[in-house]
Length: 310
Image (cartoon, rainbow, N blue to C red):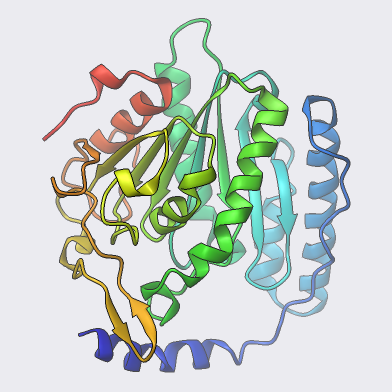
């Protein structure tokens, strides 16, 4: 099965590679990030996204230009933006400087500026849920972190930890930035979807976070929650209709590369805190009104006793 995946994956990356590179400016040069420079960073990154939209339009790429322009809309709080290649975006929903609790969403495969809308929708759904669910006196923020080059769903890169290894230092840097802005005592939870769970696992040993939730995970590359070497509580969930259940939870050496991610995070042997996710599919973990979204909000808020289990 693994050999078939590698063989089939060759066609898709090569066919995608013929798309001309979309021009975009280099990322904005920003002052060191803290509460006093936050608004300046938001403004500079919106301006950079506006320039990226103009360059994409001049390049006759209407889809990318439209995606960039949406990020320039009033009220969009871009902590980071890079319109080059598939693109990088870090967006804040809520008041980060005053937040007591911060949720960081880490996406899986096939996420870039062109598909950013669906990732933003997940972050917005969580933010809306937190606004309704947060007790008086507690302030929350959600950070949608598209800070790495995600693999294609049908590609060789989606079966190895390579992209996750590249992403891990950037995720650690983000968490340091968040604590510089919101303060050392702020509760930070990572909510990691699909391949994003591999990213979170690779970053975990040196990550100052309080909770790590793995949803729709194909595995993490680690044999157990303990082997992540983190002080954070480790959670895991899978929807009843999630196709990732059928992914073989193994790893094997293939053509000199380790393929696959090993132990299923929702299995007892992994040792995570398994919570209920309802009967949704692979893209439904942040669906408004879902069991998974309710439980994820409880994890962010530290309401661990209220989290439900199957």
